[in-house]
Image (cartoon, rainbow, N blue to C red):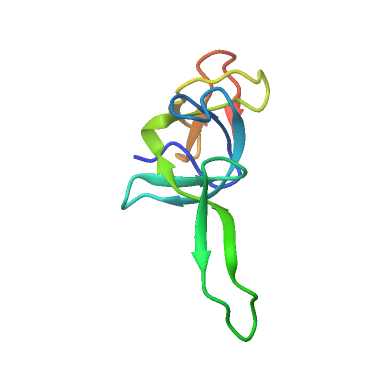
Length: 103
């Protein structure tokens, strides 16, 4: 089960960007990867086209879900969320540190 969704804030646990925080732009659950804003930049050499001048461009590359941890929006601490059920049967993520629901 994927615990991280789009627009969540995450902390990078390992690699060249260790300790940085960023917002999730996209999640690829079938590959086990996600795209984080302004994290894990790679250089892409592109040919010129009629619309684009080409050259060396920088863009974000996907990183493994196992290398990030969800940051609670209330207490601003990274923690692995637990899942609880509401009275109507809906599953929600809950911060283990402060007990607040993560929407």
